[in-house]
Length: 506
Image: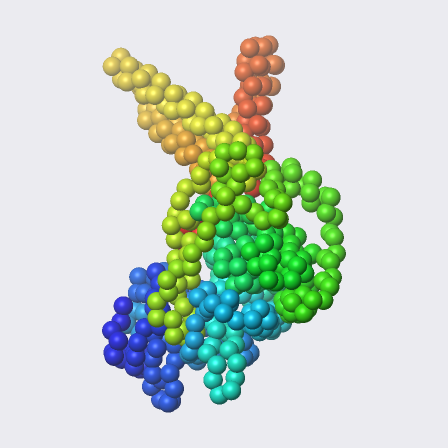
């Protein structure tokens, strides 16, 4: 951490605005102009990481193309003494995660969401998706010069240019905050502007209710909530709000993005209309029965309650789910500017996302791992067989050496058998853990088993060795079963689910 009062990259550091796991935001005096800036500095150990460096630099590149009063401005960027830094607009105030919405009329929160929606639609019109909309990334600027408080969107660190040919994050990596992530983000699908709308609706809910829509001590339950559970009724927590607000949020948080509003601004307008007591237009249904069947087949059961809320923690009886309270973290130095680095990582999900998925989740909350387990066990059986052959070959080779026989080439064969056994055992373990690498290796290993089984079946049949035919057929069918389980949609869902959890275990 740099010292306050020191000079860095030509800027004079006046204080710390916020600090997170990956860096610090300083209040700094511009070296040539009479103004203060928010200087975002990435820690040196992270500055050397190529992927994080690309994300950090892309944030400056992306935001520098945008000129909107609701988007924090970028002034400059560079590297100094091994640190990456970005100089950005200093916004005096707080953020939506710590701003007390209950102290203001409901329409003030709606107006701030509307300003954020306008910024998101502007960015989308310029080919930029934010992909990490949440309260911590919406700054609430203090009123000044007769101007009311206003919202300013920040932290485009994982934003993506929709016309880009490359993805900034590594394949399969998910970096958005779990509590505000859309179903398509969690499922690894291609996202568009409606994903940001979903996250904005979650943010609105959190600002009004004091906690995100889906709260739990276990990340698997949060994922299940986004993917399959009904949208909680905000009015169950805030009965002072009109019932129409529930329909607006439910539409913006529809599981299928085609049922959401066409834009974030349309969503924000519907919120204001609902608060004024007006009716809310229903979404256009998109193959609801088909999706319901698909949801059932994927084992994503819904757990509605009479009040429409999702209760997260099972207590062991048919009625029972008790809601886990959510507590906002204590923020440091929230005269914030530009970006509050609590979002990298967000401490709000620090302990929870590091926990292993708990047993005893509501039925269907976690995708089935049966196919992945069968494929993994099959791969381990292959590994055990190869290891057995390797041990047998080693014993026979040792005996042959004692008898003075030529054993040239045996060592290589034993090594190959041992290596194959190790790879098979590792791949079986990985696929059961929900790793794509395990899925690929298991498929590659089982394919030769299928080919060998077919070849052995044909050869044994031609020679009239029918026990050999049976053994070859058994081997071929076993290999086909392993490949089928490894490549099954069920295994794919299990892997995507596990990836979503791992990606959020900062």
